Length: 227
Image 1 (cartoon, rainbow, N blue to C red):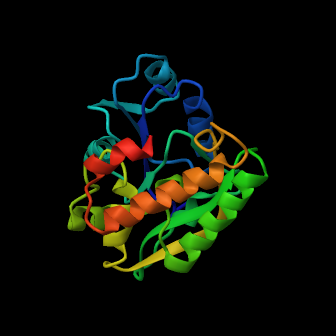
Image 2 (image 1 turned 90 degrees about the horizontal axis):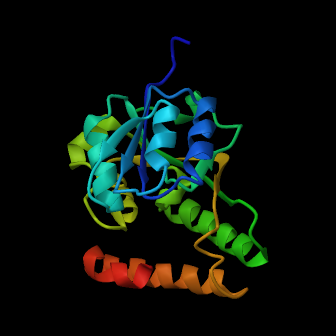
């Protein structure tokens, strides 16, 4: 197709051998220009699996922001898709969904947890409402950005986490952010570590962390509360 968009997919990973194959397989629906897997020191088979799927491998220190930043540095596509290792595209997503005209600088997708329980569905609902009302998606919503915009604003910051919130806040100053009403599937593994109400507690804790970040507390100080 003459209007096919050159998409560079950047995936930060650390010991993701049980997820990386499905993530990479889901990218066949968009036929990306390149796939860059940035490993933060995995000691399992993550790199072996990623190589077998044709991904470019970058090795760097662990830290999601730093890993994404290093992947973007070598990316050659016009659009950068930042994809978490527990996130995969749905079969409905196509290359043209990443088209950004002059008014848009970035975009994101509708969040949908894989399985989970009633509590995770409520968290999913409110996550989608938040991102639509405030155009503040988190990284698990497959944020994609024009490469030229990333170069203009100085790339993703090398934060241990919250690099997604920081990025979106800076992108909103550059232009509009596009919502693509198609689901991307995310593992609820972080939400299902405790009792039935754990997803609510986890979600509220993350909300408080973001508030403190917006108040000026550094990600390096907040990371201990995230885990």
